[in-house]
Image (cartoon, rainbow, N blue to C red; front, side, top):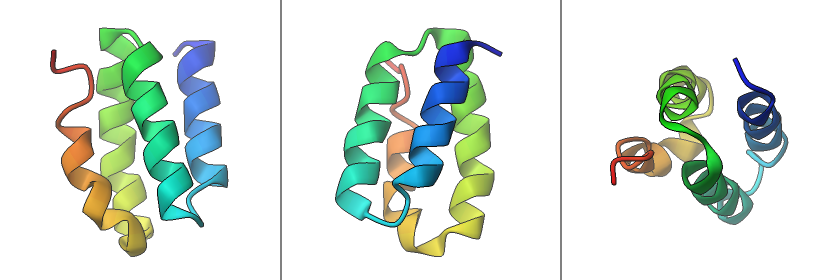
Amino acid sequence: MSRNLNYYRMILRKVSFDRELFSKELSKANQYLNKEDSSRLKQWLVGFYRKNRHLEEFSNQVNSVNSE
């Protein structure tokens, strides 16, 4: 697991109280993580959304993680 992945997981946890910030940071993570780390972030997000129901609207962004 890379430092970048750990960094974005930490950031996403910290900003999960604010939907707008969460969306911005998730977009940044999508942009900067490599494919392997993006896949790991995607798996982590599935469980994170279950615990944070107020963020479920962003679950569709999980599918766009490095899909380009």
